[in-house]
Image (cartoon, rainbow, N blue to C red; front, side, top):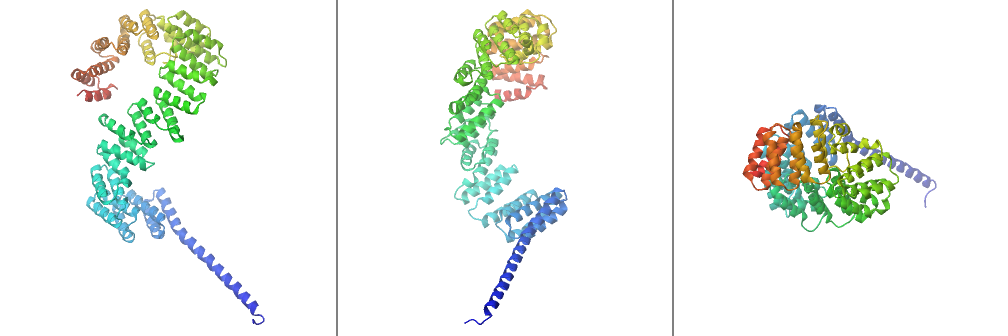
Length: 576
């Protein structure tokens, strides 16, 4: 039986013990917080000193932070890496070794310490010591890929792929598989020009690593033309994977094969990831003015997602690719947007390109929602359609219907040029985009001509441009040659236009004769290097390598400052 008062004593004792225990717990927590805060404070101070450029003080602070880090692996890594930077900034890389040696004795498997040790020894030119350090590391962690990966990576970064190959071969013998070193193996093979093996290794790496795409693209893009089919086959091999196809597509774009790039990507099964990749491809193709590929991508997206906006983008790309019939077919599918401003203007342009002037004119007359600027552009398109049909009078009437607004677009200037009125054309034509539907190369020729001659009238010039606009390239070529005689100050420019038209018509003999005329009789003109390059390329296409090389060498020697010289050098490599 408990004596009276004992319970009160026990209660007081329990309360006193509880208070003491609580105080001890609080004190212990505070001590731990202080202990944990010490490395953080030391690191903060060291980083602040480094940021202020006080490398000597930062080095001391990083050493203190490393000592204070204890078992905190993140703090240790941050501190030792900071110390490496500080000593590098002081030009005292060798001062790091005395710090690393005791640290490695305590933690021989620490990957950060080992990586810094390798990097420091290589920086000091102590390759044998670096190899010995690598051997010590891999001995301390058998069956671990980390030593091989780090050493191979450092050797690759130093531009020593052959040495990296040796390390990776060691890994192949020591480890059960090379999957963990797929990226390093692929990079090494690419650096050594082992393109077939590299392609296979990159395919493996892409299957394993979600971050390998940029590295694969960077490594494979410089592959020579002879190796590209092998790379394409490796990346296109089954099974189809998004990463491999995305890299292949981007490589083909870089190799100037946009249609093949889209074909590679389009074979993916439609899911959220592949649709996102298609959309990205379409956007990039538009930005790079690869219009046929952009059209195909937007068309595929429209077939899956539906909606007029995608069809309108596909139609616009189709027009830019000079496929008016395809654009019209796409616009017919976008029925829910047929009356919108964008759809109307696209349809007018498509009809104009197809020479359906009357249909285009009726569409403009019935259109709603077009402002004055839209109507001026539409009138210019209708006028262009009438020109294609050979009815210049109707073209003038179409422009007259919108009054002075037509002059702002330059269409009146083109009609003046077609009539041979160079004076009026010169005052109205200012940009290559002044006439919708006009061939860009022909527009540049027109502006260059108006700048090069001060003649007010040249009927043969008008006939040449009008024939080109109507699609009569044979007559246009002859008219440009006749105009060259009438305007000798612009003769090489007009002859170059004739040669391009003849080449487009596959009149190789006629084109070669004109290019030779330019090079021989107008050797000081801006068109001479262009003519000689075109001449050489045509000879090369015919298999006449010796004459092609002669022409290219002449271009390089005669026009050393021409922007075409780098292209000529590449063509010369092909010719030899």
